[in-house]
Image (cartoon, rainbow, N blue to C red; front, top):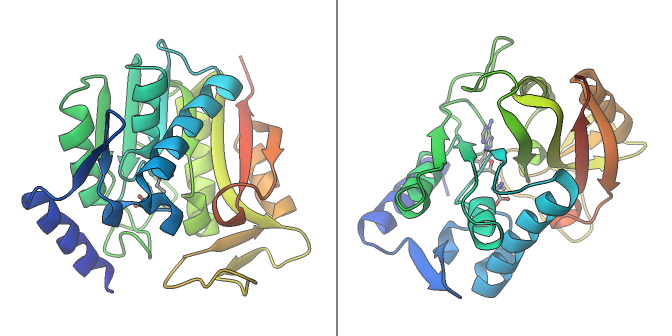
Amino acid sequence: MDIRLIEIAKRMSSWLGLDAVRHDGRVLPAPHLRLCGQEFRDHAFFLRSARAEADRLVTHCGLSADSALLDVGCGFGRLAIGVLDRVGTIRDYRGVDVSAAAVAWCRRHLAATHPAFHFTRLDVRNQRYNPGGEEITRGFRLPFDDRSFDIAYAYSVFSHMELGDVERYLAELGRVLRPGGWAFVTLFVADEVPDISINPASGALAWQGPLHCVRYRRALIESRMRDAGFTIAQVADGVETDGQSGYYLHRAGT
Ligand SMILES: C[S@@+](CC[C@H](N)C(=O)[O-])C[C@H]1O[C@@H](n2cnc3c(N)ncnc32)[C@H](O)[C@@H]1O
C-alpha cells in the first residue's frame, strides 16, 4: 500500500480512538501501528522489547534519571515506553521522526503525561517513510545544540537510509553528543559485499518496497562511524531485528 494511504489510515485510527492498547500497566501503540516486523504485534513481545532496549542503555550507555537521551527515528515510542517503565522519567528525552503519525501518537500518549518527553517531526526525505520530505543536504542539522545529549539511539533507522543520509546523521550524532557520550545504532552489515545493497536477496526474509533493507559493507560503514568521531566499543553482530548488527559507539574527546 502507498505510504501516504498508510499515514491516512493511521490518522483515522487515532481519530477513532483505536490507536492504543493497555498492556501490563503501559500504553502501547495498537498492533497495526507497530514497526519492525510481525513479532512486535504481540503485546508482550513489544513491551518486553521496549524494556530490553531501556535496559541495554542502562547497562552499556549509563542511562539514568539524570540523562539527556536522543531517540532518532523514535517511531511509535518503543524506547520511550521502555525508559518510562524501567527508569522512569529522565532529565530530557527527545524523540525525532519523519513520520507525522508516529510523532502525533507519541505526543498524545507519552508527552501529554510526561513533560520531560518531547517529540519533533523532521520533514526530511526517506523514500520508505517520508518520500515527500526535503532532501537531506550537506548542511543538514538536527534541531539540537552541540553537546546537548549523553546518549543517542537509532534502532532500525540507518537500516532504511542511504549512505549520504547515514553519514550526515552520524556527523550530527557526533555533534549533539557530549564528549564521553554514547550512541547505539543498528544496521545491516556484511563482509565481502558491495558498499551498499538495497533489498539484497536474503534466505528467509522477503524485502518489500523502497529501502526495506539497506545493507552496508562492514569496513565502509565502520570507517564512516570513525570519521564522525566515534570509537566502536562493541558490536552485537547480526543479533538485532532481522539480523541487523548493533553498534555501541563512544564519542571520543574532552
Ligand atoms: C523500523 S522503524 C524503527 C522505529 C523505532 N526506532 C523502533 O525501534 O521501534 C524506523 C523509523 O525511522 C524513521 N525514520 C526514517 N528515516 C528517518 C530520518 N531520516 N530521520 C528520522 N527518522 C527517520 C521512520 O519514520 C520510522 O519511524
